Length: 244
Image 1: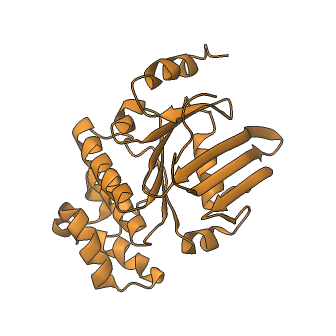
Image 2: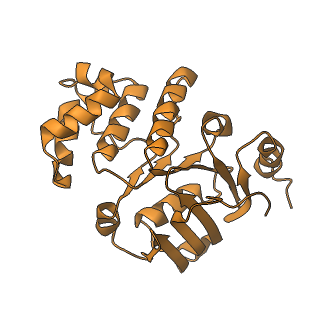
Image 3: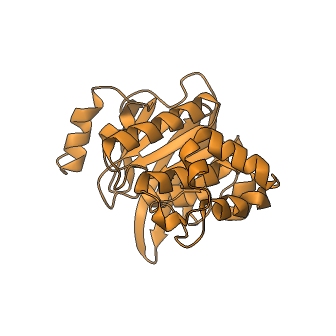
């Protein structure tokens, strides 16, 4: 493993140490070490089947690790209930967006009042960040474009006021111009102090805003370091399966 460690000068807000995870008897994570600092965007890259989504699910409490520890703000939260992790500030925006097609945009935002914020405040924050949602407030989410649905998924997640934001395949099925707009929003969130971990199949989509990157292959972090031009050669070898 080469490259700089995450959060060169800051203590990590999120830290995975030796995380292993399995489905039945099949181990998919073989000792993952990863850190994300507040205000940092870390891109978790790698081929299909590498274990990227499982890593996010472990962090969010949706999949219990078989070994290793998970620390949030220096506190051991290994095996914690997903609801407790959400209350502690962990927000997962899953692949596929998790949108209910028959509910309106406003209904989706109303669901987030469980966080303790009232509906007007949630809507004000969402519409300020994504003005198009205000214009679509009374439309069923299923009639929105893919980019608008992803904005809604992000707005809904941000209603939890997260400290750690986990994004799974934000760019999936979206036009490059929409992806660029969404990732600029992600960069702004990081500048506000949120620790952001982004899983992406297509590295070019996220590397423009990422501070740090880690390449996951065969259930292990094979490389990590600064997200710069030197990463592309590393990615080619791991995606094509030629790396040792």
